[in-house]
Length: 328
Ligand code: DP6
Image (cartoon, rainbow, N blue to C red; front, side, top):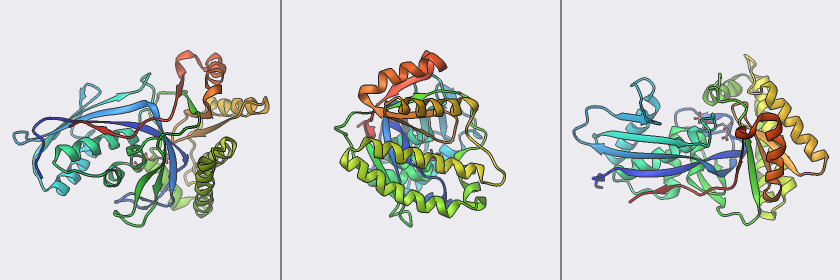
């Protein structure tokens, strides 16, 4: 194993889950309670370069041009320790990371961030991981990052330990025309992080076991919908699954919600469009922004419709994106 003598750069796209991950069986190893399934998105990505340097006294993290304090870089440094352990090295690292999101709008996520960090740091440390092992490593940073190693439609197999919990591609380059219209309803930092929110659900929601059972069924249904290119089945099941996840926030103790007034307005608009005969469905993650799953041919007119209400720059059309790429 040889440490790279130059910075290694990785680019990973973020993803939106159609069947969500919301709860861990193992908080330390990040083993989820159910299989999940996502689309990797082409418009939003993180680019990260890492170099391990013998003369560096401490890890240095530059995030979107700003040097992070020791406090705010703790997750990155913990992750680097994991990589150092795997590679059996001691050198500290210089990490430079940049999020590419069309507006500075709260759509950047830990998914693309930890996937890119896993790719760049492992190779810089001299580890030559295949994509399955990269997804296992990315998982240790953030669960959703597991899926961002692959492009197109991706599943994360729950597994039962570090070796068996990884992502695999279902359809890396979909031949049907799917798009996701992202509505940026607020750029504000979420009040309850996914990590805290899902832990509350596992520990306090009386509906938690029903969620796991429903998600397992949703996973099989969405997988079948992808195989058959059945858009309505995919959209309908994804929308149901998202709302079932959000029902867990409302039934946790203390109760909370990621919805704001605009999220509810946008979800109702999606349902109205459907009544008018335009096939589209919504999903939401751990924040108020709504994502609309639609067919590529309808994406422009759906986006235009939402732009009249939420503003031109708040509505972005994305399509299935590529898996991770790592420089030599
Ligand atoms: C709602 O991956 O951010 O986006 O593993 O604790 O870092 P940690 O959580 P994270 O949670 C993602 C939750 C979700 C659903 C999903 O992406 O599957």
